[in-house]
Length: 279
Length: 166
Image 1 (tube, each protein chain N blue to C red):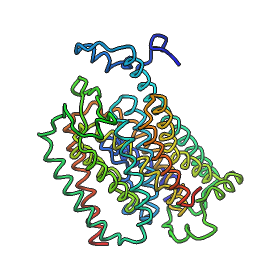
Image 2 (cartoon, chains in turn purple, orange; image 1 turned 90 degrees about the vertical axis):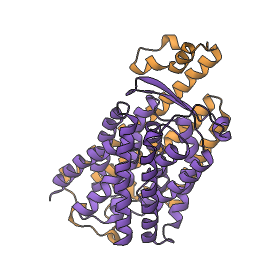
Image 3 (cartoon, one colour; image 1 turned 180 degrees about the vertical axis):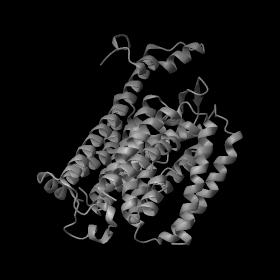
């Protein structure tokens, strides 16, 4: 395979990764890592470096649109970043101490469980109109957005910030430890613990994953895991895909987004279990 | 600062006061102070959105330019031929992974240096977004959120120093 073929192939796959990643708020890494390792036979550590780039590209590319359209809850996102960034730094230090196989199995199980919980909430996803959460009230983390699919403004209240913060801390740690699954715990944290609408959860997760990834990007860059030949087509393709995907989210029904998210989460969970068990 | 009346008619300009309008429809007449605050929040959102767009635009332009240079010059030791991670982490690696290495590579006019510079811009974009977040919260006179965001910014900057990239 020539370099040009490789670049063009990876570019095309990355566009698809960007569309999917921006819709579910997980970033493009879910597609990029398996493609690079299985299809192209690239070392997992370089694949994770490229995945990190794809996460930042999805986050910033789609984030510009989501913020402008107010689907992202800026205040909640920025507040929760306190937990994700400190978690990411902790994870970057723990990475050499903890056995990766054990972590893959542990988080595989955790993600399967949260996938089931997010799926079961599909008929009970009522929007809160009152919140007794002190932190959310004091910092005014509640929000509203115009839902394109339902053609109306949706006001919602945020609750459960302590649990949300704890889950976000773990999410940041997992992201730095395993290089994947950055948004996989963020969306359930906002959907299940904090009762935010599904689309707001994925858009806000999408907004946050870039910062979580950036918090460990310095480590990856210094270790030489950001290969320019792999990362260039990934960055360009994912950006294009994410900008397209961001136009789509508003038009989709909340439950459609929920089902796509659950399907993707199940695949990630199985992927993690497989890597933990088979090695 | 622009006022709502002299704003150009952009598509996003239409929904500037959506929540105020909604409240008015619900029977609550917004005060001018509320309107001013809503306007500030909208400006903050647009500023953050703009930072992300500029960062992404500059990054992708550099990455594509670097790719063209690589393809024209011909790549050395490209990733396609089953690369060894150890070769990269050892000294004298084929692609730059420090600021000093990046500078040398750029001085030589290497395509991979230009790509790496674009990737660094991409990595810095979310961090710049957080920094702008601190400023916009100060502009909204929300000291608590400004301090929270400042903490996030310090952790991020600290991670770069700790990671050895800066």
